[in-house]
Image (cartoon, rainbow, N blue to C red):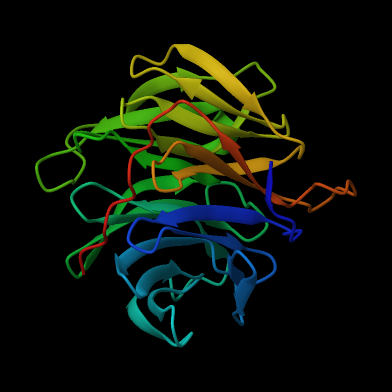
Length: 273
C-alpha cells in the first residue's frame, strides 16, 4: 500500500503524468515537488501541478504559475498569482478537459475568506469564485461540462456547469453535503464513469460518490490526514493518495499510498498555454 515512504508535512496535488507514466506530488510545507525516489527543492510553497508536455509541468506557487522542466529542474514564471497578497498561498489545482488549469488559493494560516479559485486558459488568468477559505476538490466530469470544488470548512462539495471553452456557465450548486458529519472534503478526482472520489481529511479515507452525489464506497488508508487522490499506472486502475504528517507522530503519516482498484480512472488533461 505504501507507494513512497517519504513523510511529507503536507502531501498534496498528486498528478499521474500520462505520457511519462510517472507520479508527481507536492509537500506544500516542505517546499518540495516529489516523484518516487527524487525531489526538487523550492524556496517557497508549491502545491499543485499540471502537465504541459512530456518534459514540462505547470507548477503553482504562492505568487505565480510556473513552467517547470522535469529534466533540468529549471522553472520560469508563466503568470503572476495573487503576487501582491502576502497573506495567501496556492493550494489545490487541476487541469480541465478543455486544457485550462484551475488553481485555488487560501490564507497561509487559513484566514477566513482570504482565498479564491482561478482558471488559467490560453494566457489568461481569471478569478472564478471568492471568497474561499480552504480551496479543495477541484476536479472535472469527463465530458468537460461540469466542474467540482469545495471550500473545506463548509463541508459542501459544489458543482458548476461549464461552457464549451471550460468557463463556468451559471452559479455553483450543492452537489455533496457533508455538513454535520466528521468528513471534511479535501482533494478529489473524477473517474472515467463520472464518479467523484474525495479524500476526507482526518478520517483516513477516500470516499466515492456517483454523478448524482450518492455514496458508493470508501477506501481506507493507514494515514489519518488523507489529502488528495489520483488514478494512475498504465491502466489507470491504481488509486494513489497523499497524506499529511503535520501535527501527527504515526509512522505512516505523511506518506504516499497506492492501492489497486477495479475503477477505471480518467487520464489527467494537458494544460494548454
